Every structure is written in C-alpha cells, then in structure tokens.
Length: 528
Image (tube, rainbow, N blue to C red):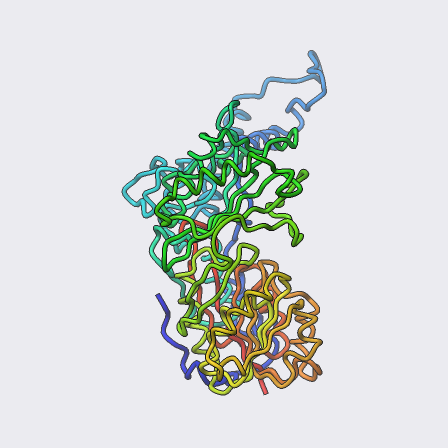
C-alpha cells in the first residue's frame, strides 16, 4: 500500500527545488484550468432529495408559485395555470435538478460504480456484486458510508487534488492500511431501552436519527467486541438494567466503551452510568457486574470492567473529573506492543486510543523512516508517546507532551518498561502544545512530530513554526505531521509552505474502511 519512496533517502533532510511562497507558485506554474480543483462538496452535507426538489420547484416556478401563508387569488392578476410551454420548461428544469442531485450524491458517496445507501446506483443494503464490506447492517447503520470503492471517497479525491495540483507533490498515494473486516479494536456504543421491563440494546444511531440500531454482527468490529456486546446485552436483560432516558434523565446505563487487548483478545469494558457515584448507583450496578463476571467464568472475555459516573443532560459521553472513574474488576492497565519497536504501552480507558491499531502501526513505521539518525525530537500532541517512543532507536533524545491529565501513571509504566539506555533519552510533561513549545521542549530540536486532533494545529503553534527566528522553534529542520483531519491539514500545510517549509513527502492511510476518513502522513523540510 505504500508508495515509492521519495527521490532522496527519507532519513536525510531534503533541499527545496525552487523557492517562493506556495500560493505564488500555484499561480505561476498551473494553467487556470489546472489550478482550479474540481468541485468538492462538503463531506458533511447529506443532500435530501425531497427538500432539494421542493426548493428547486419553488425557484423554477418563480412569481407564479404560491408562497406559504398567502391565499390564492382568482380572476385577473391572480394565480394562472401555467401554459404547456411553461410546463415543459419546468419539467426540463426539474429533470436537470434531479440529475444534479444524482451527481451531488455521487460526489458525496463516491465515484460512479460505488454502491450507495439510498440505492441511486443500485444494490441493496448488506449485499451486492461489488460489496467489499459484506455487512448486513450497511444502509441503516451510520457507521459506514461505503461498501466498495473504499479508497475513492470524497476526502480521498480531495487529498489527491490538493497534493498534486496545489502542493505540487506528484508522488502522493494512499491505500488500505489493513483488511476491511475485524480491524476496530475500540468502540463506543450508544444504549437504548430494550423493553419497558428493563434490558438494553447497544449499537450506533440509525442513519439520520437518534434511534439506536443494534449491530451484533458488525463486520469491522474485532470479534471480541461483538462477543462483549452480546454478553452485556444478555446481562442487562437478566438483571433488568434500565437504559438512560435523555427526556426524563432517568435510567442508568448511558454508553459503553469496549477496548480489546490484541494479544489476548480480552476486553476492557467501561460502563457510563447515570449516577454521581458508586453509592448512588446502588444495587443495580452491583447486580449487573455480578452477571457479567458470572458469564465469563473461564476468564477469557473480560480484562477489566470500569465505570464512569456521568449525570445530567447532553451528548458528552464521559465525565472528565477524576472522581468519576472507578475500576470495578480486573487489571489496572491494558497492555499493547505497538509499532516497529514493539514498545510496551500501558493503557487505561481515560486515554485516547486509535480504533485501528494494526493500521496505525504501519503509519508509525513509515513515519520512523523520516527521522534521521541522532535527531533531537520534540513531539507535541503526543498522547502516550506511541509515535515518539518508536523513534528511540534512531533519535538521540525525545521530548514529548500531551494535555491529557490521566497520562502520568500510564507513561510512567511505559517508560519503566524501556531499557535504561532508551529511558534516559526521554522527557515528558503534561501540557498543551503551546505550553510545551514555550517551555522549551523544541529548544535545540531538529525534528518536530505533531499528531493534533481533527481541528489541526492551534494558530499560536503555527505562528511559532512559520517564524525562522522564533526563539522556541527556530532550530527545527523537519516536521513530521500525522493528520486525522484533512481540511485542517490543508490549512496548516499552506501556512507552512507559504513561510518556507517545503513538502517532501505525503501519504494517505485508510484506517477506517467504509468511512470518508483519511489519516495522512506529511513531511515538511525547512528551506535554508
């Protein structure tokens, strides 16, 4: 899936070919036709054909169309039946609008030849001759948009256009990082009542609604997730556990998080419970825990069971206060060996974790190739250090940081498991990216690794990076940018390239097959 390597070794810094801000270069080197990318529709916009047709009809009929709240008038000057010529014209306009809607949906849901949820291009949910997912829940479930053409979604086409036409990088490619089945090892699921007598079903929201759709045979879930959901569902029925009711703020179980330890296949389960604490949760929580443990007498399913106490309205899944988290059963840390160095990481449910660890390992391995030997590396938005700590075989030193206040014990355990020579190279602080920069974490560093949230880099961080003489970031020669939000990456890339950074490598990783989402690795070198 990886493209051919860049023309020079990825472990050495690249000198630019040409100069000048990228925005100027676009105008100088591209014809107007080439400079203008094809129309890319907002990937969050889901056209509604009925509403669109109604709006189109209103526009096409003009002044003769009856406006809402007005009475039809008879006689001279009143409403007139359209002539046959006008009817034919309106029919042509309607046909044109319908065709535009069809093309909009093709742009939204993929290229011609994909199978769409609304059936515009044929095929029924859960099957089809080009069906790569082969999932019975496709169509109703909001989790996956595509069942075929999994590397040709709108955001992926957008990426190809940007890198080739705007960034002038001709070697961009992307591909599936893993197979399309069983890759998800962490899932958050909504909860709804099974009946008025108690019991819950778990799943995702139906497309376009807040109704919870059970997905017991989800094909992208690791089998242990589906097994855990089945056992939990049966336990809620047996113990008459009540689902949370957002209207009355009553009930108990709000959400669940299921994380799989890949080595053992066991599950770290988190129950989000509608109570201030364990005492207020009372016997209902205790009975459910007892049923879950009894269902796993052999010990092969549960790694640990946690509860997050969350009260009040709103769609936020977890309460963030430390007192809201309690371990009910099992080990303190889930462990994962991640990346080319197979570093042992210690994880709790409060930490961010990639949904597709198998695929993310491939991205980390690729990123490692762009860290020159004996580099001094600064990593911002570092989480538990999954990317940065995998660079210790090449780096002379690593300083990493993240804002998550729960990282301390996990990072301590991870660092303790490292060989002493590697551990001596590492420093870690809990801080925002800006705080870490201004605390001197990039002072003397020549490589910066960033893996920001979907919104991308904060403007204050970008301001430091674009200034060659910046006291906090002026020594940096390379930025290794791991992006989970492509629109933000485009914005940040333009700012960097306009200030003298040159894009030397870009590569896309499809970590979530079936979605319109792309993880991108982009490498920038500072011009002299």
